[in-house]
Length: 93
Image (cartoon, rainbow, N blue to C red; front, side, top):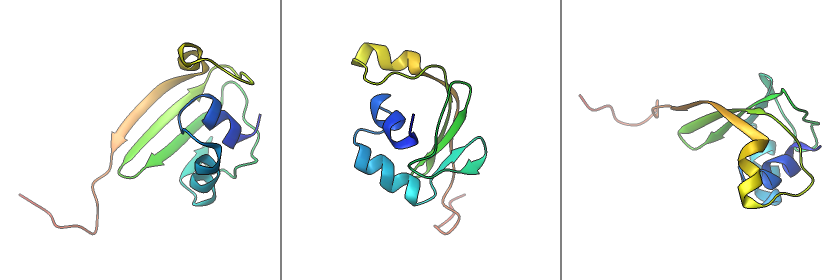
């Protein structure tokens, strides 16, 4: 399955066009390497997705062509979620 379709079907990102844009911007890593929207994903792969200052790492558990809201949580497992401080912004004590 294509990366952009997985992100949309799993509801990690709401729209496929947004998933494509995020991937094109280099904000998605597939198994530690920068991923393109058409990259093929499979169960066992790890995705690292940057949402602004938040970075979420998920492991793909299964692929579904379409999924109801209650089925999407079984498609992936959140491995790690972290927040990165803005390096360029002001620092507060």
